[in-house]
Length: 439
Image (cartoon, rainbow, N blue to C red; front, side, top):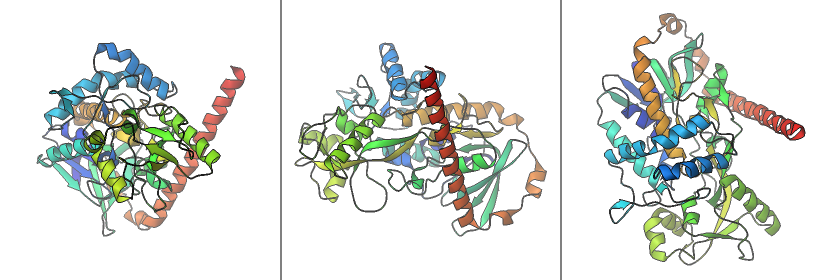
């Protein structure tokens, strides 16, 4: 199979990147599961936008502070400066954000010093992703293959030429591509408790590790403070940050408030875990008693309905919540244009690490970051695709029998990610110890 550009993943990063690529280029998008089963569809809270020049300094500082000042300043600046253009693009594609008296409505979430978050009820990710997907389906030059898994990159001498993929029936297919974009999500599937889809198992990281592609901060994993507590197995249902932004409060076992609910996520998660230990309970209580019933049902209809299905009426009672793995700040290192350390290979979205989030992501920066750097990725590919290198021999010498035992490949990939994550964690601990001792 031949294509100009291969995009691995169909979340907002992959979709928006595809829409910004030239229409005369053949684009193949593959997804491991069904199109709708990407974490982009799950994003509840919203997407940030710079409200004006007077908001720049506080937005920049909020992002840096949440990231413990380990953020790449250039990337943060690019994201913030590009936000208004991105929102304009989304509205042009039919995305409908909440409005008040005809103007865009803004809400606030933890870590933000002021309201700057646009939203669509409590399903902002679904609204954006569905509208982008609808646009992609209109393009004759874009093909999407579901239940098609990237098994490996095909590369030589630090140049990527495409990928080996596995179909639903277990058969293998090679995809020869001039440019390859990894937009295959995070690592939630490696965790017992996560808000992510279980099939997101860090495939992009695994193949990058195998071929010596540079990684960055892959031990930086964000825990979301408030997911609905359940004894059932499977993905945890997220209770959006914006619920607390609109006035929801956290109570301990004695129904007493114990924390500032708008702390950055890592600090709030730590506070909740401490309280759980003190209470000897596997959860704390979240109360929406200070939010009018009408607002709960209009602003958070999905959360309201899901909690009802689990036996809780949030307009009348508290719900049990617990921290769970949520987001991946590290990933494949990329530059300001989403280029990896391997030629003809790009990475966007949660798979990549452009340094925007630092050590901890600020609420509602993820959708924006993915879109901003996916668009920059597309622009860079457009400018460089005519000069790409090709290697017919690499395909002639490819031995597909190496990929016959997929279960072993998955286990090897999982183990390699875990080992590298632990190695990087120890490195960060030693660096922090050295800095503290010398400081």
